[in-house]
Image 1 (cartoon, rainbow, N blue to C red):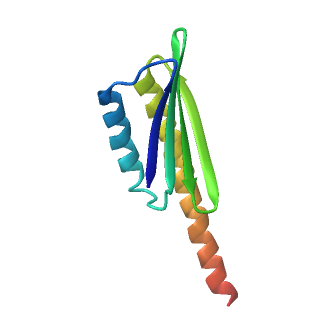
Image 2 (image 1 turned 90 degrees about the vertical axis):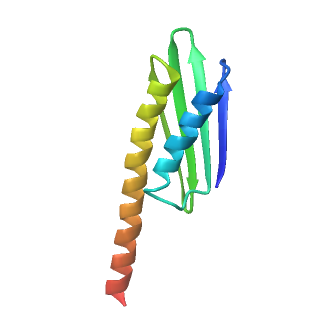
Length: 103
């Protein structure tokens, strides 16, 4: 899996990058078919935002959120992405089940 971390308007230190990488690895336990993951942190005056772009076979999932610091924003994004991945995984399972019944 390819993995990228970008910062717009702020410099990311190694601790933020390590935290991000560890959380993305936990996300991969839910759905291991992720091809590419990109995290974009941005800063605007007093607000930070994070965006997570996931490429999986057959879909591209995007989630974004804002918070008082970049890690809090990323935690919110991670929760959204986790829900999206679980929903997508459920759809794939249901599609396979329906396909078996038709035959």
